[in-house]
Image 1 (cartoon, rainbow, N blue to C red):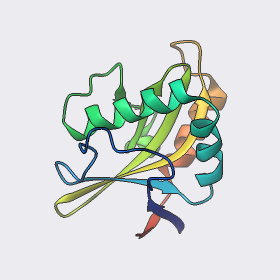
Image 2 (tube, helix red, strand yellow):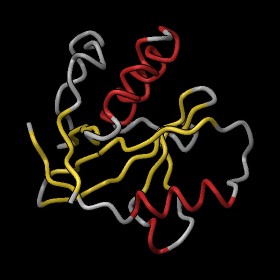
Image 3 (tube, rainbow, N blue to C red):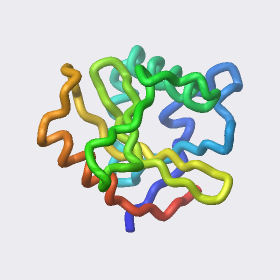
Image 4 (cartoon, rainbow, N blue to C red):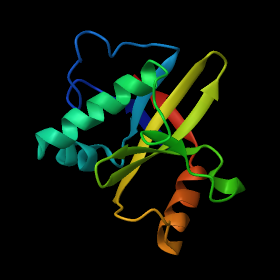
Length: 136
């Protein structure tokens, strides 16, 4: 069982007061990946801004497949989605519990092509197998 904690203000700044719990979607980060995500977002303000915009679009139900899409590489990866931020793909595991949807950011990969390599597919399948315990 892996642990995930609520995505904090350390990673995102509130975009005009809009990044609140909307549509019962809650963003979490895998605790094993937390520092890596922090590094990615703190080293590049453009990436951080695009990340914030993507979260806003997901929360408000406006995200298109160019922003957030399911990575259906196999049945093992049925709940894995990718947030597309520039040349990065932030792979997430979605967990539905009663009326809440938890989106756990688990890993990022630099991706410059449309096609998924075998190595990337393998990582996506691994993320699909993760089970999470949620911390606030």
